[in-house]
Length: 355
Image (cartoon, rainbow, N blue to C red; front, side):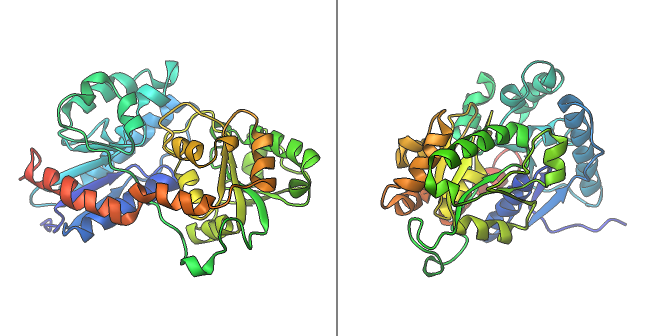
C-alpha cells in the first residue's frame, strides 16, 4: 500500500543544468524555512538528442514520468505543485504553478521550438500561478499569460560565498585576472571571450601577466565544440563543485562573458556577489544581471569586450564590489525568503491549488 508523504508542496525539477538544480534546491529550502513541507522530484537525464526540439521532448517525457511516479506514491495529491520550467510542465499529470527563467517563445525560435511554443502557450494559460525568475522572463512570455493576477516574479537567491573578512575588497588579494563560465560554450559566446582575451593580452600588461580561467566545461568538450583553448594565458578547469567554483570567483578580478542569448545570468550574479567586476556584451533575453552591470560601470558593457577587460584590470572603479552588494539586495536569501513566506506560500496553499 502506498505511503502518504507529508509534503505540502511538490517541486517537479527539470534539473537539466547545474543552475536549474541549484535554483530548485534553493526554492525548496526557502519554502521549508517558511514552514512548508517540501518534496523535490527530479527527472532522470535522457540520452543526448541531435536537436534542441528532440532534446526538449526527451526531457519533457522524463520529467512527466518522474512526476507520475511521485504522485503514485501518495494516498492523496500534494496541496501544491511547482513545475520548474515550461518544459517540465509540457506533459504535466496535474496542473500546477510554473517557475521559469525563460520561455520557448523566447529561447526556441523557428524550427527549434515547433512543438514547444504552442503547448507552452496552453500551459501558461492553464497554470494557476506563474513564477518567472525575472520581469524580463515574464515580458517574453505570451501576452495572455501576463494578464490577470497570476504572476509573481521570484528571483533565484544569490549571496556572497564567504564571510566578508575572508575576502579582499574591490579586487584586493585577487590573483586571477579573469574568469568565465562556459557550460554551454556556443550559447555563452566562449569564442568571443577568447578572442577578446587574446587582444587584451596584446594590449594590456595586466592581462598579459595574468590568466583567463575557463570553468564549466572540460577541454575535451570544448574541442568537440570546435573551440581551441590550448594557448598561453588560458586555463581550463572543467566542471567544478559549487564551493570550488565560488572560491575561484573570490580570487578573480573580472568575470568576462559574451552570451549570444542570456536567459537570466545566474553565473554573472554570483560573480558580482563574490566581488568580480562584470565585463559583458549586451545580450538578448531576460538578462537580469545586465542592468546591474550597466549601473555599476557602463564602461564594462558593450561589444568591445577587450576594452572592457582592459578597463576592469587597469582602471577599476573604487567601491564597485560594495555597490554591487547593494544592488544585489533584492536577490539576497533574506529578501527571497520574505517573498516566499509573505507572497508565494499563501498563494500556493490558499489559492486554486489548495486541497
